[in-house]
Length: 456
Image 1 (cartoon, one colour):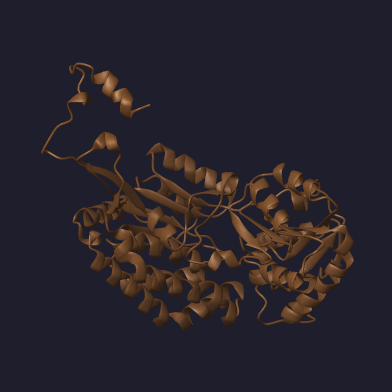
Image 2: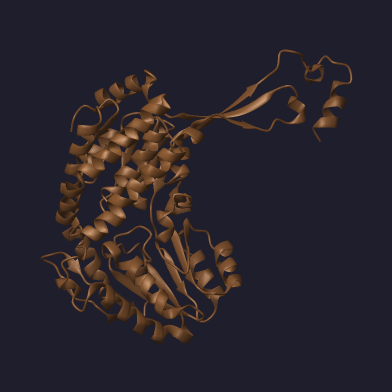
């Protein structure tokens, strides 16, 4: 743990030199990052395998490929996003012109989690660079191999006065949070998010908090059952359920419950084999503490699929649990693992009411062909974002800002959302000097009557 004040001061000095405000400089930095990721692809895949047993397919699609695509998209649009935008001017301001200037905040702190240790460190960094900021990133200590490769890669690409990676645990995060940053971007748990917000408040530092919560998945009786089962199995059990937007629990309509659960079992076998514990490509649980937390949930309800575990290798197979109520421990907090509780319903109004009584979910998924029901759920429940007839896929669109609401987070990013998040939008009025409107001044006769004509 070094002297972070020195590092923050160094980055502040570099930022105030104006170098990072050049669009050409930002584009070149993004290209360097892109080239660096490609050059370190094999090392990153090996590290992700060592830390989480991620397969090459999962590592590329959910960690590496997704950020390469994000860089490409932002490079394509950055020049137009960063230009001052002329906006309308009201008649009360006749003679003047109005503009919005996007400008970088300065030095930003990015604290990344362990579940997608590369993607969730790099994706915010892309936005920070694109917007013209300097950045300090604290990757997760729970995925040490990936964090080390990431740190070495950034060290090779950028000078530390521009972008720097700081390794360490909780004490390192605390020491960083004691410094004054211009923006803080955090991905992680709700409990730690509150600590981040408290630390940021001391310096009135703006924050983006990408948190979590229990994301519901509703399967209505008119759903395409086979397709729903496959897409839910994919969204839930990728990364062994260690995904902030994974379906946390299912609400299945009573009329299709049994046939759906049968199809869900078939989909899990199709994706992960008859013996997922022996599947070399099934992701492991990140640590013994998390394994034991998940293992305790296996006592709740009735296991109807899976349930096998291997503590030595930190693996729990995809598991589906029935006869669950909101009072069971598994329903008290985000599961963040490969265990899927199932509740049944008859009336959609009961589902909406049940979800509304709990903290805002980060994501929500609904499987139905009925557009009226779709609108009822979308407008009736507050949640970060989600999909109709799919899971998790909304996350991969650069046109859809990703973020939570209420307890599931503050702010959003991805695509233009990333540029907007890491930019302050400065409003400027350019006033004419060719004439002056006399009615704005208090000494004009009948001035108030004229003003009332315009402002009413």
